[in-house]
Image (cartoon, rainbow over all chains, first blue to last red):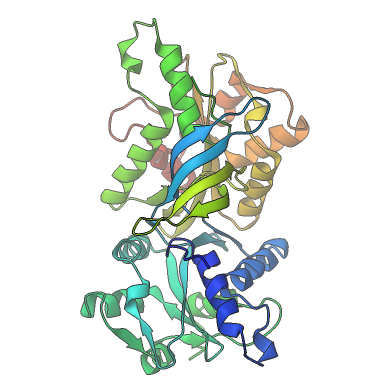
Length: 202
Length: 202
């Protein structure tokens, strides 16, 4: 059993997810992984010309590379670095969109420590440039995912100095529960479209 | 002397640049590196609230990770992967911007083989979503950098099936020579601003 650092969210959550699933009989969760679902949704948006959104690669600090003859370069020493921005960015109808996706096992609140200070700073910079920024908060045990405008995360974070947790009621009050559906699995563009179109979903 | 794969453009160009500089007496070039200059320009735009643009991390395929006791995770086997998108993206006045930066030692043309097919596909997707896409083409021997709207690169690429080179005259006709200045070193936002503002710089 390996422990992935927090920088490798995909693997970390996969690992924890499959462990968590052990012994459970809820087949709806089988094979489900939050990051995979987001990536599949992004693929759907891309192939249907709805939006172009990609996950950024995990930043790696490379220390040593071997160059075996007639083989491709092999990295033999490297370390995970903490990301300085959010994980996802892209374009929707000419507008810049930017988001971070996080998961929790909590049921009634979302721990702010899931967010790093530099991610909050990045979000603030994006908002200053009139970019569309938000977070997707996934409650594993509730099987619920919320779209929360980034301005709210920044506000909570700064009011609480990065400590504490955001109560679920506040997320429900200021955010939007993503509908449960198969394709795309995480339909965040629909919520976003209502937001920028002035529509109401609350 | 190591040979970095094409995926590590920063290092590769640094290496080739310093080699190229050997024996030259042109001190204007000393210490200059195209990628560093772009990153410094992005820092300038960020700290001055002009734009938020970041270089994406180099994608790495991780094969093996060691977890020494009381030490951070160490990647002991990994390989470079080819990027599936362009290197730079961000937000300017709410608009999504996306670009790729390339260098050449050629003097009269820019080889199209510097661009990969999936990068061209990515650029086409961005243009479909009304994103602002362009390329920065740096001629090392001329000490000139051109801003070329991405639609032109796509057109040249598809007309020539990714082969051949773009003649300098065509780049000069359809693109914009970046002014030579110190801060920011690569003032691409100024060109972009004229473009989207309907101003003319040609």
